[in-house]
Length: 411
Image (cartoon, rainbow, N blue to C red; front, top):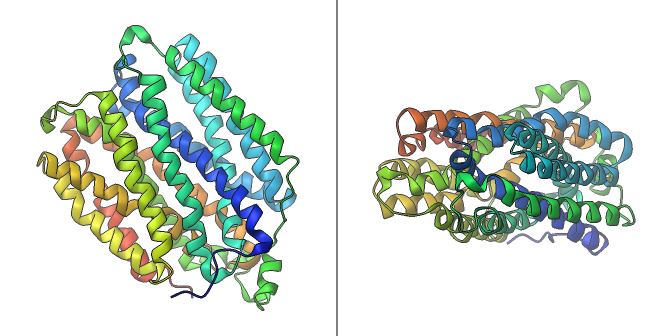
């Protein structure tokens, strides 16, 4: 059993405050996975075109990650968090006129700015969490914080299904008007939180301070000139790209899978949306919470390897069109994906010393995998079937398995 505490008394309050941010961006992401099917009905667009919803958000991650990392290196974690919250709020407010004007592309623009805010928050909060305690419990700590993200993934689809889909099943006559109130409310709540953070005291932790606290000289960590040659970081960036691509594809087309004619399940979009929240995302949350607990007893890399292997084995069952058995396999994939993002993140930035913020920016940039993959998966579904589309993530999870077994090792 691990003797390292999750965090210390000194960092307890900052750890709670930062962990709460994970709930915010998890809710924003969770809402998007219901909107794909909604836009397909309302605007008469294809599955591939609806993938532009995820494309807008995840391209923002690619665009904003390095500027956010630079901003924090110059102004610190706290100001980076406030900047992220303000961008989040502005993006949500832009969606309001987009809904009134029934403009899909203005909506995508609002999502892009919102995504820039999420990218900034993640660039700040993920590495900051790993520093709020002993470095030996970093993977466990970030998994615990990410559990609140998992909880939000339950809330997001349910919120979107109730307030946006309602009981209307997204009839074209309803347009996008049902999105006005939810996003206006989100923009206001996030703006209030940004103002509160301006008055909250957060310790500004530098990587040099962390190194000295653990008796390690910063010069012993990866210097700037060798960061691109740091194999475990580069492979971690690729593994994170694969994970976010696979996760976004599975989440985005869950509703489409359940309502697809070839499944013969006779499920409505609203029912599928609630199943996404209460079923899939609940298992995702349970997986993160239990994964953080398991890491007291098992190495994070061993858990990551087993979970990624299970995803590889379960996806063919999902694709086989076995009715309830395929649906159960799909639900289990939510559980086994749960610990992947935070664990890969912590492994990728391990022992980077003063280059942690910059390395974190590279890992956040890899989230761009979620921009391209849903459109590709949607194209496969349009060409063949949604079931065939669920074969596409298999090689992505296979690479994560390699990273867990070998690629993560620090050299």
